[in-house]
Image 1 (tube, rainbow, N blue to C red):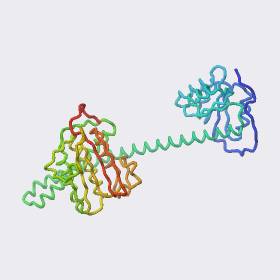
Image 2: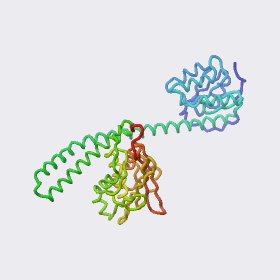
Image 3: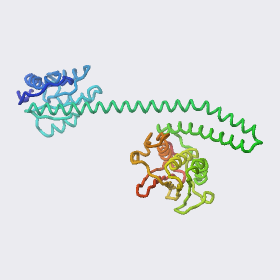
Length: 394
C-alpha cells in the first residue's frame, strides 16, 4: 500500500544553501514523495533514498551511516514501525534520529512510533519550512549528544589514566620508604644512649610507618571503590583513637593555636573517662578521623577550637566534628566528590572522598553543613555501635 501522492508541499525557495555536511535517508514506497523530499532538502543535505524498509536497513548499516532518517509507515515487505524497531536493536544504528513522515494522523500511531524510539512524528501534508526546521533541530540535538558522549569518554579515560598513575606512584614510593624505615630502626639501636636523638629517630620511624600505612590504605580505598574490600571489624573504643589522632596532628595544630575539645552529649569530657564503642576497623577509622581532622585544622582560623561531640543514637554512635571556618561555596554541593578541592595549594580533594568511602564501608552515614552566618562547618557521622547482624563487605 502506498500513501497519497504530493503530500509534502514546498512554499518558498529563498533558503540559503549550507555545506552538505549531513546525510538524510528518505524512506517511502511512493517515488513521487521521494523526488519531492529530494527537491526540498538537496540544497542543504546529501540525500539518499530507499523505496522500502529492507533497502533502508541496508543503507543504515553502510559506512558511514545516515545522520537522520525520514521514515514512511505504510510500506510493502516491512512497515516503518518494524524498520524503526530493528534500527533501535542495532548498536550501529540505534543513535540515528528517526522522524516518521506519514499520512497516518491517529494519535495512538504517533504514541506507538515515539515509543519505538523515533524522535519526531510528522503528518502529511507538511510545509517544507516545517520539515526543514524539524530536521535542523534534531540534527543539532544529535550532534550535541555525540559531543557529550565524546567528552564523557575522554573524561572517563582521563580518570582511568590518573588512577593508573596513582597506583604506579604508590608502588614506586614503597622502595625508598623501606630504606627510610630500615635506617631509622638501625639508628634507634645505635643511639639508645642519647634520649634526644633517640626520640628524633623514633619520630622518623613512626612517620615512615605512617606513610607506609597511608600507601597501603590508598590501595584499600581502591578496593572500596570497586566493591572488593573485606571489612575486618571489631569493637573499638573511639575516645582513645581520637586522642591518638589528635596527638599525631597536635604539632601542626599548635602552630595555629588550635585546641581539640571532646564533648559527650554537649558537655566537655576526657577520653580516659568515656566508654564509647564503635564497630569497625581500627586502621580505617584512624584514617577516617585523621582526614577529617586535617581538613578542620587547615580550615580553622588561628586561636579557635575544634569540637568533637559524641552521642549514642540507637544502634548507631553519632560523632559531630565542628570547626570555625566555612567550606567554599564552589565545592559545597560536591564536598565528598573525588578530587573536589578549592583554594588549597597542596589539596588533592581525596580526604573527604575517602572519609565518605570509609564511612559507607562501615555501614554508616556522613553529612556536611557549612554556615556562613555562624562561620562554622559541621560534619556529622553515624557509625554502628554494635556488631551488625550480617558481616559488612564494601
